[in-house]
Length: 313
Image 1 (spheres, helix red, strand yellow):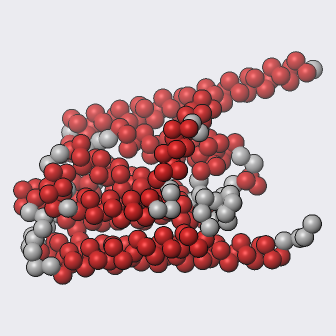
Image 2: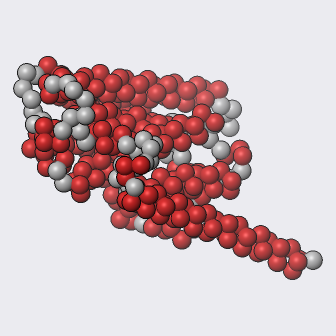
Image 3: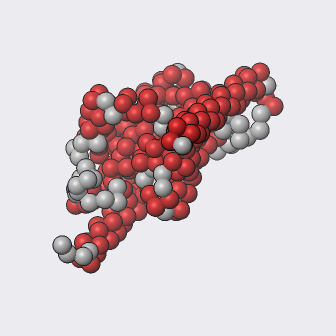
């Protein structure tokens, strides 16, 4: 009887593993078909298809959503995040993918304010929603076992510790915005596809690390930082964003002449384009910091209430 039960369990495990590897195969097939279609018939692709297909973006997005779904299947229902957190994570991933792998990416290469909207999604809205989803435990449960030691290795943990250091994190968050907005850098980026991809990846990855650090609902420990320090970090990143946004939206000088080379897709002046982009950086980005502060305070008060009414040993 015991042997039969063990054999049945092993058989179920093999079937499950086979289904998962089959899903990976289907994912690669879909990616290959999209790559072929975009390469061979670029003019015939609808708006929701990639303008320039990227295997890294496709794989990261597909694996994140796939591992999340597998993780939900492997975890007991009592360990699932609330439905609103599930929806937040999925929406954040979808928005990030849409900013990079639809024809919107073409618009962002030919209008400054479209470009600022793209980075608003990558660095703020999409990353914010992904962090709000608190998806780490679920993705970890859905990830193949042989990959887990890679993500828990000392180099990876050391890199994360550095990026999420309370001094480095806000400096990096604001510094990347300023770096990619240097006019000479913007010119190089828009004329070099590798730099362009590096810029977008850096904004998305840094945004996720920053907002994950800030929006962690847990107190310290096990969270990296206490609520007070997180609130200070959110306050610290707001004035520099407002300053650069105000400069770009009020200036009478066109700083980004590269869009004359690329060609604007809308018939508006260079200064209007720059002013709209500055306003996007000035107002919505600052509002995201305010929203982050409200969530930090809400998490703090909720944890204080739980501690107050928790049964005493």
